[in-house]
Length: 433
Image 1 (spheres, rainbow, N blue to C red):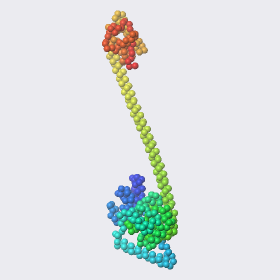
Image 2 (image 1 turned 90 degrees about the vertical axis):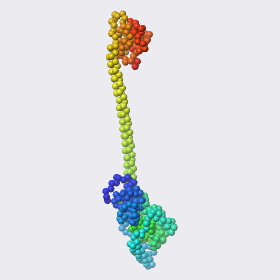
Image 3 (image 1 turned 30 degrees about the horizontal axis):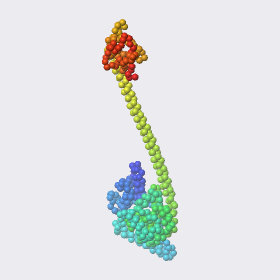
């Protein structure tokens, strides 16, 4: 088997590759994948195309139509042939010998006909229609007292039997077979046969005169008719586990079917267990993946929140730094302005100067004293107060009693015109407080 990377396919595609391999018998998984890809992963169309190649019909794709493995694995080492009932005794013996001779001559003639008329083969235009035509003809001729026919193509029946883990009973019908009417009415119409087949199998049937029936007969290597084959999923391959040819009685048919099904029921039990284990494993994996995704989303959400908090914190720190820088710049500006304002302050007069005004100024927690001339202005007093290191940056100057605002003022007045005398108490009020 060629190297094949299963990881390249999704679960549905891988399942179709394995089903296609089962239905066609192609061992190379890469070839199975390529055929399905050419048919857009349509399993029914791909299988039908592959089966058509065996008939020599032209394909829409260039493939080697000379090689066509059987569509299912055949593990049966013997063919069970049932002679017609009543073959015991003298008359029965001659009838049996005649039947053998008839079948031998018929087979030889069919072989000769096939050699010289190799191209004259039934062609299946619509496999499903071939099956439906057979069912309709069978019901008209033999009635509806029979197991439920599967209404679909052979490949669909194989696929459903595999999917549903059921036995597939294939019946190939040939109109020219001796005593076929007895077989259809008495054996297939037997109530116990009908009940057992309906209960334990999917029942697919077709006439070998049709294209679909002919292809299946070739694939299953049918020899004598009526032909029955029991197919079941075994080791993940659809496998023929029993075949019957000829005309068994209802009792013989039931006994043979029960033996085959009982001997191979273990295959379906194992397949169900494997599917249950795969389903449990897949469910566990999905739960683990879901838990991982939820954990991942939770971690991502935590990371997102942490990142948002970090960005918010950095933005707040940046704002605080900007505010601190602004405050520091304002402090430096005021400091420089105080230094410049010192130059605007007039000299302090002598205490004995008759025009001196002695001021007691309440500056925060302390009281300072300073003398000014009555001719000095309130602006001069402001400049001296502002030049003090502990003075507010923005303040007003008021008298004690009666309370009057001396600064700020629209008009710049001298101390005398502002109503101050030789001794006054002034208050400084911080306007930014």
